[in-house]
Image 1: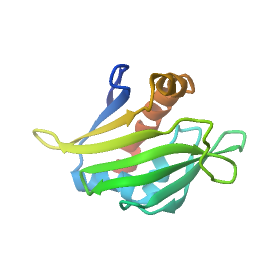
Image 2 (image 1 turned 30 degrees about the vertical axis):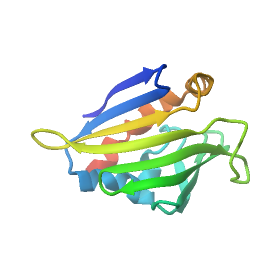
Image 3 (image 1 turned 60 degrees about the vertical axis):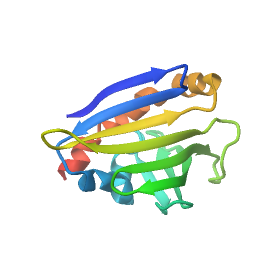
Image 4 (image 1 turned 120 degrees about the vertical axis):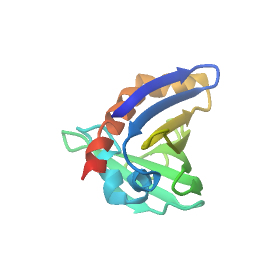
Length: 162
C-alpha cells in the first residue's frame, strides 16, 4: 500500500506522513531497528543511505550519510530520545557537516514514529516531524523534505517484501 498521505499543519509546526502496510508491528519496527533495512529506505531512491552508527535506545545516536548520484555525501544524525519497541520512536533529526558534526546552520526537527495496528490487519505508520519554527518548516520544505520523505517511505514496501 505504501504512503497514504502527507499533511502540513502550519499552526502546529508539523508535517505528518502516513503509510499502510500488510505486516505486523514487529516486522514494521525492523525498518528502524535493523540498520541494513534502514539503509534501504531512508533517503530518496537516488540518494542511498549508509548507516555508520546505530544505537537505537534512549540516549543513543544514529549517524548516516546519503550519497548523491554525483557521489557527494550528505550527512545526518538522530539523537534518540524515546524508544517503545515496536510501537514508537522519538528522535531529534538533524543535518551534519562533512566531518559528521551537527550543522548548526540548518534547523533540526523532532521526529516521532508511531506504528499502530489497523483493523483487519496490517499497520499504519505515522511519521510526524515537529519543527522549531514556521521559518524552519518553510526552509526544510523548500529544501525538498516533503518530497524526499515521501520518496523514502515509498521504498518501504520493497524492504518489507524482501
